[in-house]
Amino acid sequence: MERRTFLRNAGAGLAAGALAAPAIVHAQAPQIKWRLASSFPKSLDTLFGATETLVRRVAAATNGRFQIQLFAAGEIVPGFQVLDAVKEGTVEMGHSASYYFVGKDPTFAFDCAVPFGLNSRQQSAWMYEGGGLELMREFFRDYNIYNIPCGNTGTQMGGWFRKEIKTLADLKGLKMRIAGFAGEVMAKLGAVPQQLPGADVYPALEKGTIDAAEWVGPYDDEKLGFNKVAKYYYYPAWWEGGPQVSLYINQKHWDSLPKDYQNILEAAAAEAHVVMQARYDAKNPAALKRLVASGTQLRPFSREIMAAAYKTTFEIYEETAAKNPRFRKVYEHWKKFREDQNLWFRVAENAYDNFVFSAGQHR
Ligand code: CA
Image (cartoon, rainbow, N blue to C red; front, side):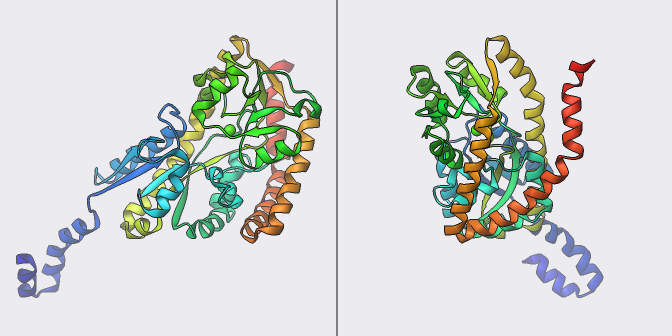
């Protein structure tokens, strides 16, 4: 009040501008406290760790003015209800894997992973530079959510099997913990997909209530001890070539956020996105060596199984696209982008990877 009166009385433009500047800076840097509900447990220092990277950077870049409090799955919101909680504004933001929500609409999966989809590099290319993010934001707007990519696991492992799976016949009646589109594909191939929360997977596999379970990859899987209850570790997860995880921000809260904080949040998410992939790539090799040393038997899925799964997958996409216009819109764009990506990746990347990854064996 006093200052305003003074400024009005002062009248001079220059003096008023100089004096008003601190007041403007103050108005643009408010103290903000948000809550972030994660779909992941603290024990997953890779997935949950992405949000730790994020909130540390946001706090540091705003001199502690923008604080985001992290909550692991189940602390304030159950893991699978993160989307609803952000949509309703129960929490300002969340961190989740969008394919958890394919029951609401299968289109969600494109924000994370679909069988025989993009690898992590290609997913980032589609999101940041290929028009995928715009499409997914348009889709998420109906859920009152502003989404930002925030992490990728890279290609996952196919999971733990109590018995060897060599042919399609071996899949008949196989009870496997696997969800979403992959579960649908497995069902069409004769398996019996099971939906189990993370904590229930180990006991079910141990008791033999299920025959197989997919989780993430060596580093995360080792912590859960799956190698103690299933001997065969299959690869790759053809349903998760490069699963992306995302930040969900309630649209109203996003709109009310000062522009500089919006920018800081986007930049911190991009950083967390890169760091999470780096952590997986850095930690997986040692974990894989330890698993193999403990007696784990590595097995690739057979060509027969991969080819049948591939064919079935695209039949399901076409069926889904025929009855869901939202899915069709994203799918058609994604499919074209994917074809071009694979055309390019099979030239330089594939030749380089194929040679270098086995070069040690040729010396
Ligand atoms: Ca998985």
